[in-house]
Length: 386
Ligand SMILES: NC(=O)c1ccc[n+]([C@@H]2O[C@H](COP(=O)([O-])OP(=O)(O)OC[C@H]3O[C@@H](n4cnc5c(N)ncnc54)[C@H](OP(=O)(O)O)[C@@H]3O)[C@@H](O)[C@H]2O)c1
Image 1 (cartoon, rainbow, N blue to C red):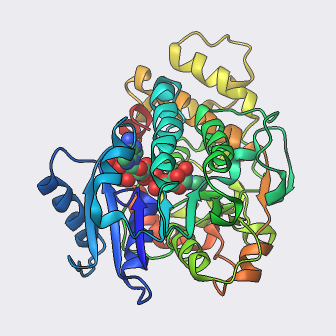
Image 2 (cartoon, rainbow, N blue to C red):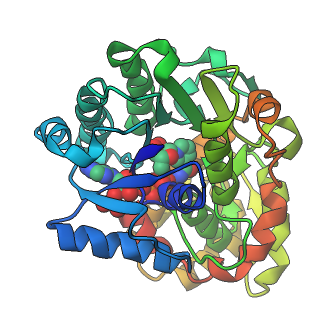
């Protein structure tokens, strides 16, 4: 069996690649890698295995250099004779930015890039399955404080906080324009944060939001809102297992579900006392974020409710010398707070029924093993380039 994988240099795709490289059923894994040359794509691929401290088998794992948004992508892939026998495509690449400044890029990669890939995929004679890594958050902002089921999405009437989730929803719909039903597998992770293993100091977006909240300590979010978070290693295992499982569905959440979901209060309690120089966590209404932005601009009115939190404002004055950077931080954090406040839990019964991965560990438990890494995250860097 031959696989074509996109996004292998990313947070989740790298884990999927390592998992796939160990599967005996697979002969070759071709990885689409952005690079200026073939040499550079080989180096990037080597780095993924080196990062995971894993064995790189150059006969099994083969880079294909290219960019999803290249209008010639489908033509170039079709001309590559090595790719004619691809049986399985796993499309994990995406632009996952929440920031509106990247909206055009998000659209280009997640829509045009997917279209380019599908143009090629539909021509493959031996293709069994096209696996689209979607996101459970395509259900939009209309569903709050309850369990969400796979069948509820995609819904074109759903409203979205960010372009990213909207484009991921359109992407799911687009699959059906190009491929027959029986060739489509959609896997929808919920929120992927960190790792259950203590050895990977990676600070991808959600961990950035957590590190930022951990620094601020006065957090504008509902402390009891249900949070569906899964670790990256569990997510990659779930996806890999599904590729080879006897599947009863074409869409699966890869999520914490009811049993392993958590809350901001529980997550913060997991590491609150590890940072003794910081004030205790205090959660306030999400509406207060506008007051926080005003405070950072120096235009907060004296009668603002935020002024009640004197200890925190003094603490911010001490740690955030550059208030401009602080405003960027608040702006970056806002969409995450909005997502958390939705209180969405994604049902995981399908995944548990069709695979042996079992339920994920709760993030308020496994995060304890990554505490030391939270300190190493440059929150300002993450806010500027989310
Ligand atoms: N992270 C989460 O919380 C989460 C939750 C639910 C679903 N997902 C989904 O999971 C998938 C992987 O997300 P992630 O967190 O691993 O993202 P990531 O770390 O940002 O990785 C994105 C990957 O896509 C590649 N890519 C981006 N633009 C490309 C282009 N124009 N051409 C070729 N490759 C391109 C990147 O390559 P470079 O290395 O060259 O940039 C990278 O390998 C995405 O489909 C995302 O929607 C993620």
